[in-house]
Length: 172
Image: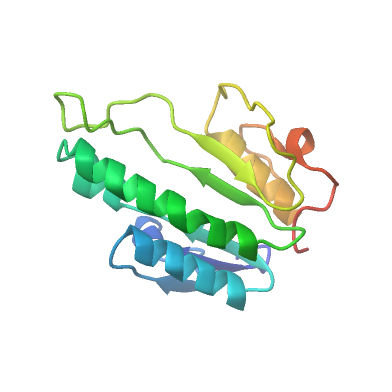
């Protein structure tokens, strides 16, 4: 909000951030509703950030040690993502990641993975770039800030230079 950009928080994002920095909050019923609401927000937002949290993989399946449910939900999300990618404009950046790992096949119901996936996509993003193992999750924040044209003074470094086909990958 300090950069005067709209920030749409989908899923539990408004709750995680206690509404701070969120210009519009959208609660969801499940992960596919979250993807659907993301697509709707992409159609409505001309500039800014859409921040979506799909919580079911973690809360319904990971913490409950339900690998079959986890697999079904992951497959359903995977099948819905092409619509998100189709909606991405020439200068949009789609970031897909997780806030922590949660393996439903381990004996523990706690967060059980140190590493999380990180995928960057969009019409202006080169496919097949190996991002390697990052030293800090803050690289995601630095990358999003770079895509939005916002100065970044925190830890981490932007991956945008390594993946962008052009220098303009944001709507700004």
